[in-house]
Image (tube, rainbow, N blue to C red; front, side, top):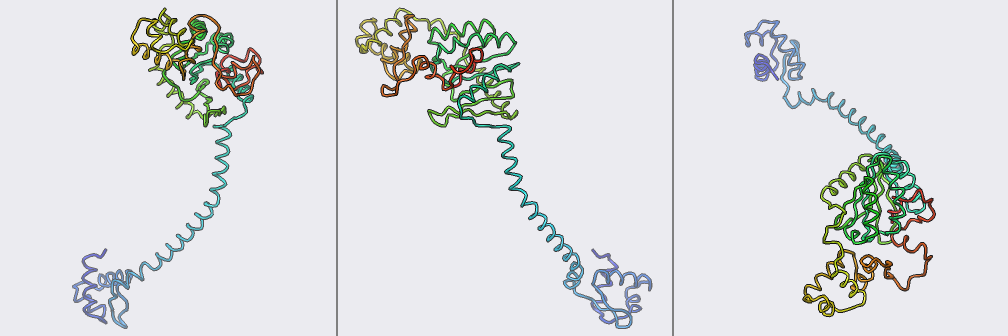
Length: 363
């Protein structure tokens, strides 16, 4: 802070209070001009006061510092006060900004739709206008074969437009012969199907710009979350394609085709035979029989042996497919709508036939 000459002058003045400038110059071996300049510098730093009339007097560093920074501190306090006022003024605008942006983001990027007809109409429009790619993840363990077959014409029309369509199903759907036939027909036209053991949510992603995800907050929840935010849609698309790479082709392995033992096992289950009776009829051990039955039940999502037999009887034998009633006390519904509505909450029957297809995949 102080030059060597200034520090020497300050020390001498401290030791010789009241001295004159001439005395200071002689003692410090300076010219009068140099001594005057040095003392003036000490005055500016508030370290020296006085003149030749009253003599030179040194000021303690603490007092000098207080005098020097007083103006700076005053200006600093004024600046801090002004900054605080501006901060408070801008802070009052934040609630308005947050509310407006949250509403805008929700309206533009993410929308929850609970009205089923609205979801159906929106899906139908997306299916008509999709240009490049449609990704579908279907968590249903037993897709309605009837609705799948009815949607094949629209699916073929979509594929004819050059749309890349990937379908991810739960593996248990490979059991159904009707589903396999519908899948095979669309695969010949260019659609792709793969399966995994379980799918947590229903997802439909259109052209990487719009996605529909089932909310599934409870078992009966049929609401759709419509996502238009491009970043979120791309995240969903990346997750889908990653899972797709590890999924298995839909085409069932050769061992999946119903063998004579499978036909006998299904018939036995449908008639309520015990493991011992089934094992004796098939000529296998009871343990092997039980393992085979559990594997079949897991594959189709059956909760009881009899339910598995009834669910598989139509598929294996080629006869009519009959599903056991989920709740015998449930109110009766229109027969024509019962089967499709069991798998889909959307009133597909209200939509024109040409707008079905992928729309039927919503619950």
